[in-house]
Amino acid sequence: MNAAKKRLLARKRNKAHVRKRISGNDARPRVSVFRSAKHIYGQVIDDVKAETLLSVSSLEKEVKEQIKGHSGNKAAAQLAGKVLGEKLKAKGHETIVFDRNGYLFHGRIKSFADGIREAGIKF
Image 1 (cartoon, helix red, strand yellow):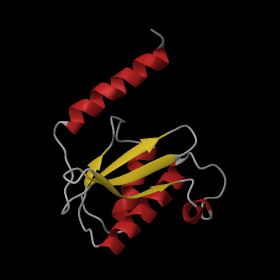
Image 2 (cartoon, rainbow, N blue to C red):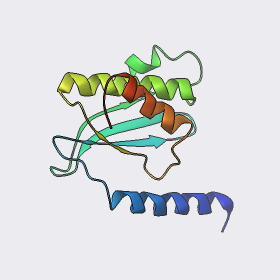
Image 3 (cartoon, rainbow, N blue to C red):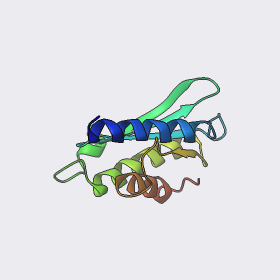
């Protein structure tokens, strides 16, 4: 098994371990984050109703306009998180459950979370 496949399997194990313990509801929805080499994506999920309430990515027009240069860096992740936090505020959500989706909480994932906090959302 090559190194890339091992990393993917390790992330899936971590993801399953975390998802056993956290769940989103209407009062505290779950924010799940996904990162690729070039972009970052975030979804706000109500697990009780099994529906996605809203989402944001570094590909969206309002985020892409403000990103200068590469969209796969920490600055772009923080900006995407801030936009997601503002959308959450507009929908009336003050607190969330953050799902790091098996990734380590550093780098772009931490910047995304800091952007959400910067918008005034608590978790």
